[in-house]
Image (cartoon, rainbow, N blue to C red; front, side):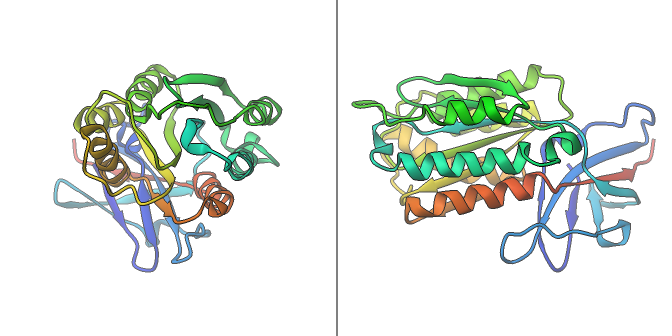
Length: 269
């Protein structure tokens, strides 16, 4: 895929960007997030601020503009027993993220749609894809810690990616918010990353805990998914020591995703 480089900021590139322009087969598009050292979006960039390299060759950047293409986001929330008494921080963070994506004028500017999916015991749709902030916040208000349950992130990643692959959206993303605890999913990281790439979705994660254990296999696959999945799809992984940081991290991620650039570059026949 194309990989832009920007000297003064961190650049995140979504895999969905690799599709060919419908009206001109010699043009391709990448959706790019550019943030500063504090993780805040960098605005006001133009064609001269990006370099696109593809197949070891520099491509001509034709146009750069704020991304207004519709964006579907699957929001995976850890509502297993590991959530414990951190429900307040989780709900606050999810609400801030939803507001950043759907509140104000962003719903008209980028046409974002969110789905809320719980991870306790099995992936469960708490709210289907919607652009309505009221519907999402109502579902967030029902998020609670499920007693005697484990997380099923690995299963949810595959099922969600397959669902996004079928959706008619120019941009798609998966965002996971997790508290460290047992993992009961059955897929390995290779299967999950392949499913993400096939769907064209970027993967972003906000986690609380060390997430460094290498056994059992499910926990190791989860760690590899968080590492490889975010790196290889142009996403970001914010690992926090305390759940108190979840609201700020999710609000910042919302600003990033709602401030992407659309970079169009030329290719030879």
